[in-house]
Length: 484
Ligand code: NCD
Image (cartoon, rainbow, N blue to C red; front, side):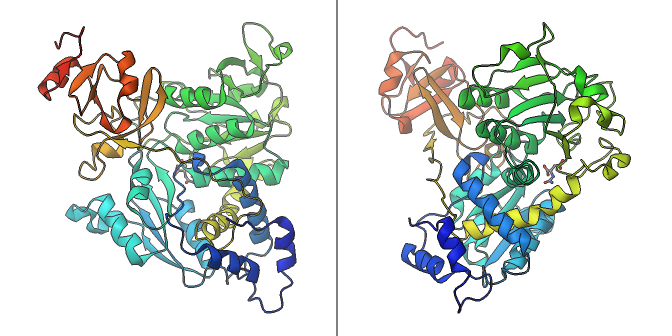
């Protein structure tokens, strides 16, 4: 597809017949030539957007931020629907403000308990209805992990994930990255502290994936008991070869005094000279501290240790390592940043929230096909997923959408590795463990390490927790397996 270059973007603003902010004639021609996109482009995970596209979004957001009222001709006649199954202030209002500033309209179901959900309507049906003529883009927030991925399967219009359980929150991450880009001029090589509830904060998970992808380093300062989950650490390792290592965070002062800090870096080779001793990697100076609140809606509080929750106070800000650090928070905050820190010029959390509007204007204009991204790279590869023809629901994650949306979220998986076979749930991305693997054609099951599994077509793979379950489903053991 033709892309608008930086030069043409600059030229186009001088076209005389242009409604201010409307797509340029050149952009319109690109759009007209391209016709209707055969399938909508969705933003479910931060992985769904390439680095080049992110940079192009930042440039577009800069234009929107400079003249927020000048682009009302960009999306006239377009409608976004906010479907929020969980509370929200910033995400929903900044998306709606963004759509209104682009000249579009908004439909809001902010309190989904007043919708047909109470009558038992499935998410898939709601999405088909709203995407089937009511709206041109759907902004979805849902408590189940993988809900946005499921919605994207059923939606003819772009689905934007505004947070799905603890899994991801890619537009908050684009907002956070955009803030780093504005404040620091770059993201590559920065040292960013992620503090607080690293276990259940979806903003932290999406942000960590993106930071590693940009080549930034992460210092995890978790609340005890709320460390970054294994599945996130594993994904950082698999995708970016990040090895967690102990961090010596004494220079972070009392912010990290009760926390087991961990350093995650995609940089290779490590500068071993910065290792002090057994205390590990020495945190010297950081570029940003990203604080998060305890996500108590996702845990009972029992996981919170006896120690009081981390708190960033004025005296913590005196630590030498934080001299040049910006303080960020996706908000809402509770007590984890004391009010006295608000006046510190390094605190940018309210600016960070304000920048949610221009970056979301850019996201909407892009996904609606109204402004092709300058110098955008190829979209990230879409990974094919496969349905499981028979067998029990294989996803072990109790928060996965496939556990509640049983009619429409039939078990699906993606292949992580073929030899030996490793698969993940196509909705919540959690790796599936299986004791035996069957073929729905031959109805024979095998041990997971068996070489013959390579010969089974992905769409015929069936997973069982144990041999008994396979036998019960009418499968026979391969030679060498007992069937018990
Ligand atoms: C975050 C969220 O909903 O995950 N809020 C937001 O979108 N700005 C963070 C939070 O609720 O703690």
